[in-house]
Length: 351
Image 1: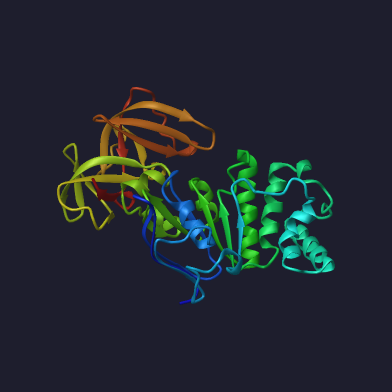
Image 2: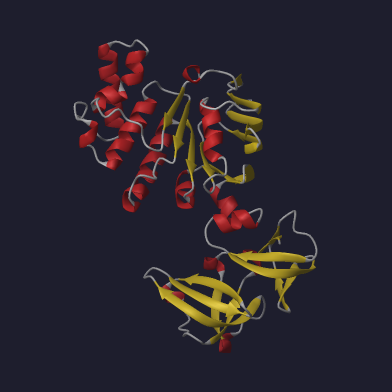
């Protein structure tokens, strides 16, 4: 099978299971993000792909080649560590060409490749500069160039943006995605930043408590999370306790609410009605919707320019709506309103 395949992979450290029975497959040339909270196993899984950790059970293969017990230096993998791990006593060029030098490449080959990579990461002509003279964003680019020096088949990055400030992090997310698309290299990124994953990934793997919860495109996971954990971790969600009524409706405090999607493990009885704030609309009492609306009281309004956030207390359950200024219904704190959740925006999850 072509691409990157992870089959039945488990990693234990004594009695502690760090990664449990993971099965994944990705096509060659895709960018994959392992996304989850700290301690969920995503970095351990990345290190097993790199060969820095050995799987307790299962196999890891790429393009049909079993890598499970192949030593790190024989895997043809490039890796960028969270700290970048650059050599401070070497110049930029010496850092980038280090792996080529120890593999026996000639000086001219190293210099040509360093120049090519510096042009690729938009830092031409700085091969002689010291690492200590570089900014955080420049160091990250140098670390990326060093990892790409030997034309790896798989490119791995462990929290590559965590050391950067917010503005630089956003621009580097776009830059890294463009570079990956240009090279067409199979890339795996570990992150706990949902925006980072949504910006860069072809596929996102959401992990929690050593397990994979859901895999899919960014929009698939955002629009149709499989459970409460994924809904809560990806973006902002309204998670309203409800009770299953019939085939396509639930009851929220006695109000019938129709839904568009129901997860496989959401059975009869208690469930959760999930909506995204940008798909929730607030109406004045005089403009009550004909269906799928909860009555409530406005308890907070936050205007942040491009959007206005309205929080409504619906019988003790807070529901958040995010609207553009032109759609703002001119409601005030303490005002009675109706919160509309269109059926197409409602997902039913297991309680």
